[in-house]
Image (tube, rainbow, N blue to C red; front, side, top):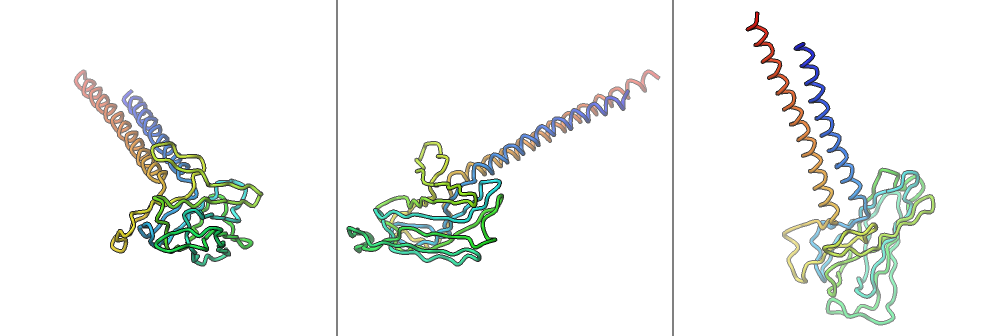
Length: 248
């Protein structure tokens, strides 16, 4: 009988622990899904009128197609003059500029030619496969002074012909759209960016970290509850053994 009680307690503890771990795994999975967007980060602290290196992180969200092309577009209303791309093995980059119909005053100068887009194209065998991501880096000089946010709408093309446009504006205090445009917040002009290097991440990263942490907490709670169940079962078994010895 004592062995039967012990086995029952073990089953209860294992089941409760399993529920906690399963819940943690589901939450962690949700965190990974939430962060699967084309996003922009910077090893610098981008400021108005300053220079910055920008890295676009591009995940492949399809199960049966590869990402073969990425286009990033730039505003000519808040123009940037030009960009330099970092070489990426297996990909070619083309920087496109255009002469503005009407010159724009920016950064104490008059901009007559502006960056319009950068296009990366994969060579055969180098596309982004399902479950993978790639980083595309470039550097711009003279970020716009007239905006608090540097927005870079992106167009992701797949090998099966699908095209995903990451061009929806993210509004503070509102739910993030399904396909948010990559963007960087710009610090005020003249702010010292040499002493502190920060990374501007999309809001989903914070959500993902929170959800991932919640998953670990739920899993830990499951382990704790399972341990309590086992401890109670052992106490019952010990009590039964003492009663049995007293009766003999």
